[in-house]
Length: 76
Image (tube, rainbow, N blue to C red; front, side, top):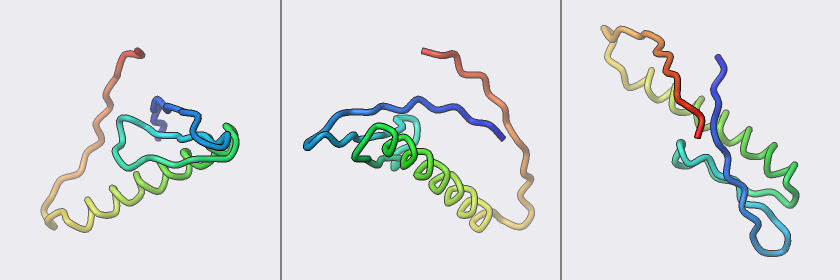
């Protein structure tokens, strides 16, 4: 399944970059270079979404019905 997120890269002290995904609270990381920040935010988002899915399935009652929802969000 493909998801698209906007990532905000902000230069911080000592030449490092802060990377965050505004749509996903908790998806925040940094990198010494912009490329490293890109790699780190991709991994952070993957791990965060995996954790959300696992927790949702664990917390759902046994009779819960699961479906996929596809939503088109216009680009800013």
